[in-house]
Length: 617
Image (cartoon, rainbow, N blue to C red; front, side, top):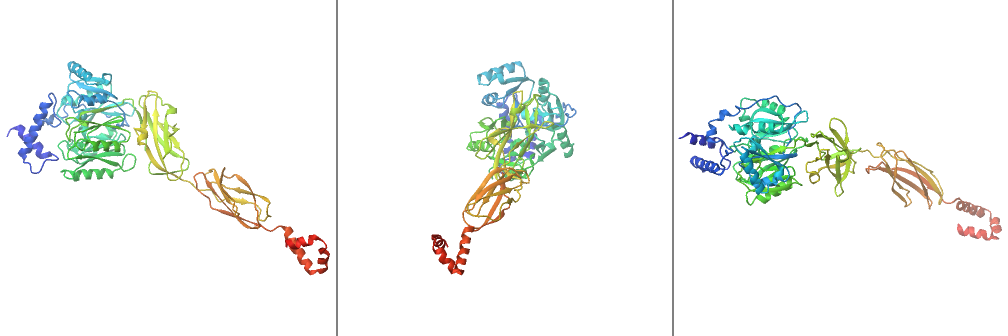
């Protein structure tokens, strides 16, 4: 058995393939792999495959030989996420993607192409021109390279404690010295400091939320056997600002063991994970991974929301590229393509989701062959959204840290919070500067149970504008509003206890509210008349109301108050007696006198007044 054959046996038997039938013999598996390997080399002259070639297997010991260690960046360090603002994308010629994809990317960002020399640059420029690529959005990094997997060997962008962009250069996990030098070549070209991260790694096995949480498979442990897990975590903290490094089993069980083959951060609190047919050989592992992330805490302090995209057995949809407000999804022409596009559109409202065909594999697609270039002068908003039930009395406080890495001032009148209630229109509240890049604004208090949507919008004098969440109103944050509020105290009523009919009387009502909220007053006069929530009145204001009773009787006046948030006070009562007219009572007395003195009756009979009085009685 020759060396090449032995190496391939080791590759297949040790790491396996995710969906190879258990009935296949080792010889069949090896032959399939050899055929795949030779076909790839024929189709991609001048490029090495994503897997280790047999020749490279013999040079594993060369990995990291050219690595240049450096001190860590000035703290604190922040590493942006893929869904943050990108100024460009890094690709390599010969290409692993179509001109249609390159043309699409050039509509919005700078396409930086790695070429070996000037002749290659001129050829690529001509090809770009012929294929509709916007040359005004193209530049070239002239440097030798070995493959087109810029995701795996390309620069990792960070912002250091001086609010300046830097590049973190890890040890590429392939013995490919030209690829391994690309981060340094790019940093020197752009004048960006490069920091040597002393870990063997690959970009496809790494994703971060932009706020100190990152995820890789356990391949990072395997490739750095001389370090403890704690030492690896500390290096990630020092160079990338990672506080929580989630290292998880590879759910696919593939040879490459990259996280971007089955999971992706779509937002700081949202992760998409593939969903496969139950017949997939690692179906249970994938479901366990989804459950694991559902039970982890995001940087917002909430559990991760996990969205799924159906990939059947090996569709590459998850290996997509988020490029500002677009999502470029690798599709294959299969029956599941449309559902995959719909899954991304549902998970990322407001984004334009575009599908592109290519020479994709389940472990190697669009994401592997492109590398986003973070906007060097981005306008960054750090904000923990309000969510769930929110209780307040003075308004809902929206707080954020805002970093204009351009060094330009924020435009105050254009920096604030857009908010609305369900069914309402967007309103704007300007944010107030506090200190140390901190800003805040108050959304007015709302009635209990009101759904409030909001997003932060920021502009600076560099011409940049950003939102949080990134896409703005289409994916606005949401919470349910409640008032942390005490109702008014029991009202005080002052007024007469007795009166006569058809006479106007004055009553005064005084109500105090614990939070000095304005109040409404409700008065039931007990005679059919009601003053229904009249006002507004100031807390503690003396309220004067006049009322006339038209009939005699005993009346119980009822009164209560409510504040502007509909919190009501206890009810208070006040009794008043309205007797018959006094003249009517005197007649009754006169009648009794006449009954006692008959002579008086004869005398009064001479007058009609007597008869009238008798009739009235």
